[in-house]
Image (cartoon, rainbow, N blue to C red; front, side, top):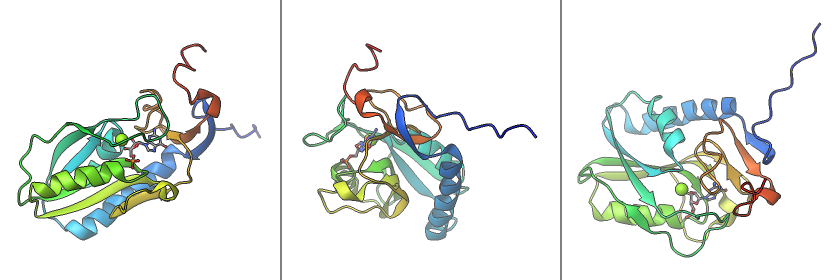
Length: 194
Ligand code: 5GP
Ligand code: MG
């Protein structure tokens, strides 16, 4: 009998794989079920926080058969650092009118909570009929402001992760799974010099 083929590692710059593509896809399907149970067949407006939530939003939306509208908000990112610094800022806001609409805010990861809080405050000012939040990952250990998401994919440990939309200096977003970035790759330009 031929030896079982070992799965290809996600990327050489990762020290550990936290979530495989199959695990993510299974959980995305079940979150879609949780969302459906809350919204029924009704229409809602998805607001994705870009760029990080693009993959998650694209996959989740396709598991939901409700009538949905989509808009995006861009919030200032880490740049090339792996720790949140200062206050996040909204760089590009909504184009759709969300007054009296049911809104589901989607982000890749809930960390200190500052980003989601900032965006929730902005959305609430626009008087939606309801506001709920959904994140793929939750790093509870790092929370600095009181913020919990209504739908959470996975609780993860306090480690800097990349893949499936999450980046370091704009790299690794296209990995199909999620893993921990090797410490020696966690400084700007490390990859540029090899
Ligand atoms: P917060 O404002 O909750 O501290 O941070 C949320 C944002 O920080 C997320 O939208 C994400 O862009 C970024 N972030 C937080 N933790 C990580 C991480 O482990 N990896 C990556 N790539 N981004 C993270
Ligand atoms: Mg983000």
